[in-house]
Image (cartoon, rainbow, N blue to C red; front, side):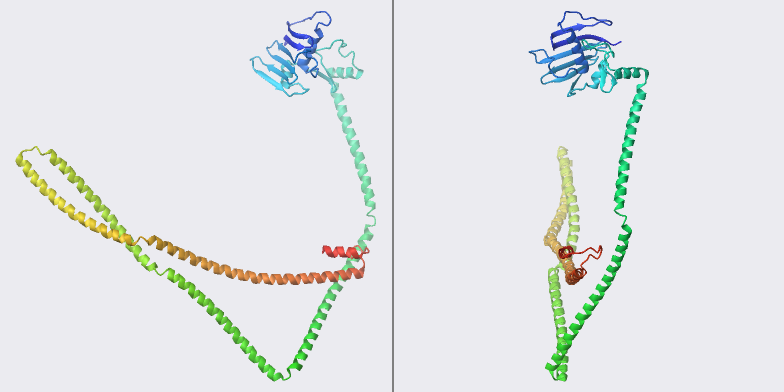
Length: 479
């Protein structure tokens, strides 16, 4: 069975330093009064249950306090407290240490699990320490109230489960009763609110009548608009008739005027045709100028193509010349090797030396003659090739110019398309702006007529309630 093996107390109340060793079994601490026996129990309670709180138990004149408890299984719990530090230390059987800080009034779970001396909760608000008893404390449960005794006995025989069930049942019953009261009150409030809608059928009938009157009003308003339009057309026709009569009176001779009008119309038609021809002529002239610019910019393209073909041929010739140059280098290497061989054979008898010398010199002479002729041909070919290549120094510039011309031509076509699209968009915008102006004018006219109708009615067409001047202005402003 696990038991406390040693307890070490430093600066706790009257104990400056005390260390007690306990045996497995019954241990008795003896001594006179005020010698610190109760302080040992308080130190145990402080280390095991973090009680009491605060720092009043620190020995007067000291800054720190420490209690260490070592159990029979080798686990050590150390409780330290100072003005600036409040920690638990847990040292296991392997000597590994864990430090706990910032636990407040609680006890770290690891500490409780290490010593296993937990309080028993007879009630949620009545935790009891059955392992430690304070000084002058009565026998266990004897000094407690009847309810606590009953709960303790109930826990022993398992009746506490029924008590908990009754508590939960009472809680649920209270919640159900509260919900019933709340729903009943809501039901009454809903019935009160429904009384406001008892006259709903009459309101619906009046609303239907108002809708019919509103429909009739709309029809009359439409007819009124038609009549106003007809009136405006009649006034315009009358004014035109009057102007025509005045014009006829002022003109006098109609035949002469008619002939003059025909001549003017013919001349106007001719003028319009000439204007169209002039515009087309100007467009064609501009197009010709653009095409001439393009032709001027691209007039050297044929020469560039021919030069490009010649450059390709010259490149091929250059490759052949490079091959000949390689052959020439190989022959030079052979000559060097032959010279080395001759230098090695210089100590042979004079006859053979002279004969071989002449033969080798003759062969070398023939080879050198061939090599020289080939070298001359290669040099001549290289000179011709360099001349051709020098003619094509500006070929890349010509190619870039050609590409730039093509790009500008494509951009010109795209710009023409964009220009046409912009012209179409401008014309469409003009038409849309005209339509918007017409719509705004119509809306203003409708608002004026609607204001006039509201003033004449003096009532709201929907709810039939009286409507005042400031209300009409507010409605019109919102429109």
